[in-house]
Amino acid sequence: MKAILSSIESLDRPLPGIRLIADSAIGRQREPYWLDTECGHDLTALLCPCYRIGRLGKNIDRRFAARYIDAFTLAALIIPGRHADKPLMTEEIFLASTNALIPGDDLPFGPEIPESVTMCSGTGSLEFNPSDFVCNAVSRLSAFMTFKNGDRLIDCSRSIRATVAPRTSINATLDGKEILKIKIL
Image (cartoon, rainbow, N blue to C red; front, top):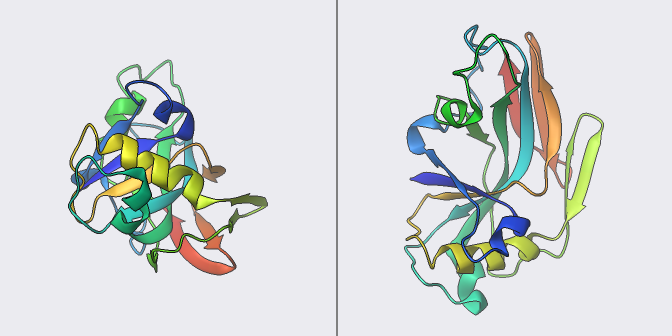
């Protein structure tokens, strides 16, 4: 299983701009998130739409792309701030570390893609149409890689920022249902 970070803008290029997150860096939301003193406390969580691939596929036609998504959720992508005193802690290294991506509870995603979805966290709210990203992303990226059951596709172009601070929690809802809760220690 892998996680693929992408955005609509990067999909329009001849070779889409993506980042891969190894399965070892994907955490679980019911476990506390321990702040690592090595990366400092200057962390941000990007809450992004997250789609789970439910079928094996390669070179998927755009017309059939929605059939390859079996679940939908929000995921917290934890990214570090820039530290002059820690030049080795780059975003690439941090994305390979444990709990860099924490997906929420999966909601079933049928062949009919919803027209509009609203995600909320704290004071931030964002409404979007998932089909804008899903069909294009699955079709374009499957030309370069094979999707496998359980792979995660993260839409980084639609996100809400949340501050990661000690003794706080990150809560996110999707269409009014709490789907992600992370306790920061």
